[in-house]
Image 1 (cartoon, rainbow, N blue to C red):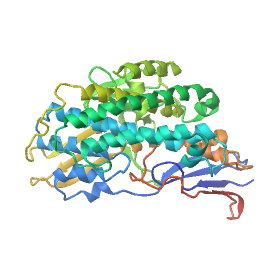
Image 2 (cartoon, one colour; image 1 turned 90 degrees about the vertical axis):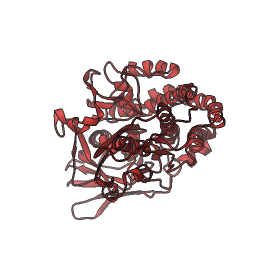
Image 3 (cartoon, helix red, strand yellow; image 1 turned 60 degrees about the horizontal axis):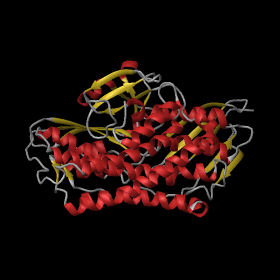
Length: 474
């Protein structure tokens, strides 16, 4: 048997467009596998020459799934250019908005993109293994997912005026204070959201034994974990310090100033992908592989900081003796973060100063550069701008949350392919598992919305001369 290449193009049920190539050796065994991002955004160049105060609204257009995170990271970078103190109430309102986005985005990932694998089976008919098949076979689960995401989106709309690409968050704070009516409307729907999330988590924990093979092989290997924690070590999505934890759960770096991100994060490029490959600088490239996102955040935090989430976090951390390593558990971590987000929003909305009218500080260009860091649904998000004397952007660097995971994601694709793919005869289920490890990371590749459930997929097994030896289509 000669060397051959499998191509999965596009990878389905993710946000954006990517493909997977799997290399087989002469014995039909997997020798290599790569995940490729096949499109380029170009926002770092597009924003040059624009006034810095336009950046939050412009950067929100990067993504239709998590525009709020880009909006907030950009606004924080612009806050630094203003060099002024942001009102405390504005920080709380931004935090609530970001948590609402995390709730709705995690709901999309778990219920719409990944739960068909759990409820219908990894080996089920791909024509039904989607949100439509889920709605037919498990209508209540589908309704719960739609409702939970709807609640998150409605909170964003009520606070910021729009569900997608809102312009409410600006340099210096937010545009308008929160009204009593809006606060009360949000508080009214949070118990329902918590009930849905709790029910989903309780159910998910009961099915884990059915996926022991996937848990063992879905990007399950030692890496570092990076993200934000509060000054007291709690789960944090808006402010805080960088913490780095190793695979045994030991803190290797703590209370790192986010403004010095370039001292600990390097950026490499691979010739077969438009996605950057960041790495932990003290270990170098590619040994400095690390992960971000909900799994990493629960691994680096000492606790969540809300009652139900703390209980679930403690149970989650019992899965492994050190850090929880299997990327299959990203799904588990998302559900815990949804619970945390709901509980934390309620805490913030009941703050005595949440209705304060002082929600924006005004200033001009006082610093030549600014850095904004926040936790997006998929992980740490960094915006870094430099401006001229007129406040026009001269340079921008963006490290998108998905990029941090690029090295781990690629290694996970290889691990799954080596375990499940048999080059002698392809099966749809084995290739779906290669895609499923990508979905576990919930990558946002194009940073834009796309039509769910209508992507075509063609996999061909080719001989060196180009003839098709085996083929699957959907």
